[in-house]
Amino acid sequence: MKTGSIQFIGTGASAGVPVIGCDCNTCRSKSPRNKRLRSSAIIRVGGKEILVDATPDFRQQALRYRIRSPDALLISHTHYDHVGGIEELRAYNIHSRRAIPCYLSQSSFEDLKKLLYYHFIPKSEEKSFSAMFDFQVLQTPSGVCDVGGISVEYFTYAQGDMPVTGFRIGSLAYLTDIKQYDASLFSHLYDLDVLVVGAGWRTPSRMHMTVDEALSFQQKVGAKKTYFIHLSHDIEYRSVQASLPTGVALAYDGLELDFPI
Image (cartoon, rainbow, N blue to C red; front, top):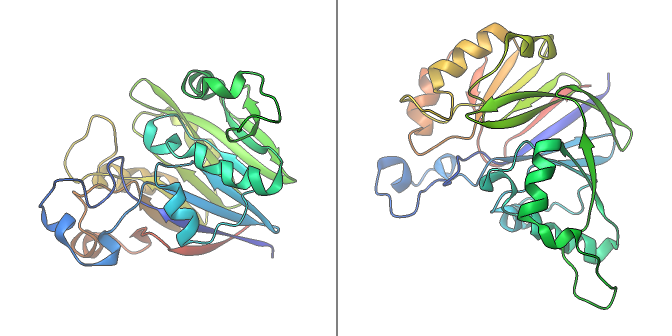
């Protein structure tokens, strides 16, 4: 059986953990599992490395986890904590002199054209250059795309007014920043070995699932194992992990998992 792997290079919410200026128990904790860079992952399949989102912490993540050269970038959506480090990928362009394939929705592409306007201005070779991407716009709300020979299924849900793209590779599905969704979403989440889903808070949130809401969601999906990401400082690892049922766990920075393709 062919397998792939996922490494969580960040599992934190938009502010990371510890949060600047906060003196709560989680932020003061010395446990490494309460130290969270912004949520991102590297998926490795067939010798390829696929980066999911480029956070403001990407330089630190790349150095810590020795990310040598991503073969592709998947963008879930354009909130800053998911694209704030996109310019850091320029280091790979300098070494390889090639553009990185970047897969994203039409709405995310329109946002990036505003955020990274200078990418779309013709540049001469002599000028210092920004990160280079080969943008591959996903034209439909759901479908399948070929990412360097790897079949990636994608689908759409929402976080407030922001459309968000989720991804599935083999028996792994990755859904960050999920709050609103249609029942049709579950048609993409059958027979999963690993479900990765955002569950940022214990208390009600307008923009994110709570732990209880994520538990209800994972019960509907029925994956063999579920891992929660995008964890705020409201989530103290030891106490919350102890409350979770068998087959559900909090992801933590550096965690690596295998999954069947």
